[in-house]
Image 1 (cartoon, rainbow, N blue to C red):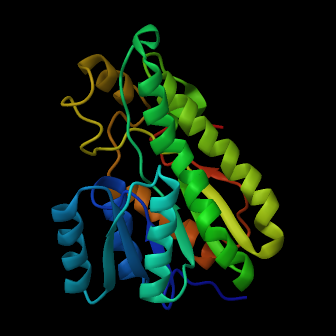
Image 2: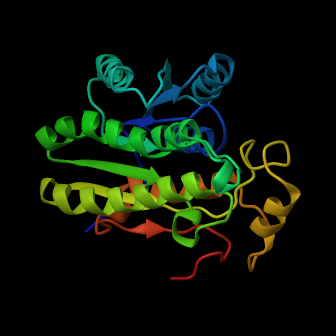
Length: 253
């Protein structure tokens, strides 16, 4: 039995790929030979820069703007991706937002926005992509959850709820679609140095808690991307419904 980390000949759609973990994953997948569909939402400059970077290293990529919390936008995104590259072999559900807010100050709009972007989008994307994977009899889906979906955190109730939902959805889909030779797994990163995780968006107290882990540092987006590449490649053939944790020790199952 042979194994390869190559994604040659495959197409990967990565949501929220213009920056952060998504960008690092797109670059790494392209280096492994995948054609990359860079999904973004109103980040034209960042997405164009990523496509240029992929093409500069000899890869293929297109950027498609779509709000992945909207069902009609998701279907257009998937249709356009298939029209461009013929099929989707890999889906990485990476799009996400975060908000620090006391629970009793959290509005219904806050709740709906967080769960729409961080959880509903995963449902919509999987629902749109899975029929093609089932027809082909193969595919890999990688969902980006969070260690906070396991641990919980005060002042982050909607985010923790959404990420816990991603974990539950991952396990359910893994069981349902494994007979079709489709691997569904998730990554639950610890604190990662991205624009979303910074003092610009979070309190100093939150950042201090994020650093209170055994490695006492933020991870790099590339460290999460490496796990995504593993789960997308045939190195992970026997992985089904697993939640991998590149987290610096924040969670030790």
